[in-house]
Image 1 (cartoon, helix red, strand yellow):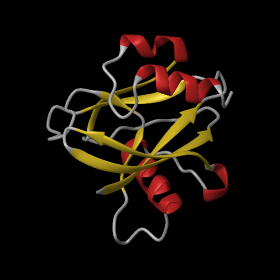
Image 2 (tube, helix red, strand yellow):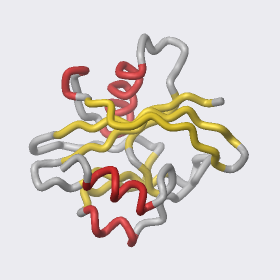
Image 3 (cartoon, helix red, strand yellow):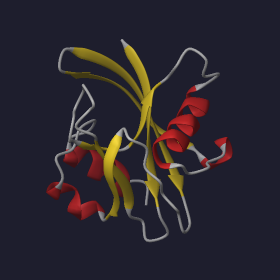
Image 4 (cartoon, one colour):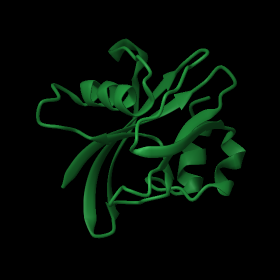
Length: 134
C-alpha cells in the first residue's frame, strides 16, 4: 500500500489549483490532479509530506498551521492500493512555479472540473468534498 497526500489549494476566489501530470510520468501521465504525492520515509508526518510536495510541485510555501486534514480514505487505482490523506489550504495571490513533473497548472472553478481528465478522485466526489468546505 502506498501512503500519500494531496491538497486542495484554494485561492481567494475559491478556485482550486489543479496540475497536469507530465507525459514523462509512469502513473497517470497527462491526467490532472491535486497537488501531492507519496509520503517518503524521511517525512516526519503527513503534514510535512504535504508541505514538501506543495513546495516541490508548485513552489508555494505553506505552514503546517495552514493545512486542515479534510479526508482520509483507502482507494484502489490500477491494482494499486492507496492510503490517501487530503488536506485543504487557502492562499492569497499565489505565484505558482511548476516543476518538470507537471506540464501545466490552473486555478479553476469547481463547476469546470468536468472539463479535465482527472485522477485521484471522481469529479463528483471532489465537487462534493469541496462544496462541503467552502
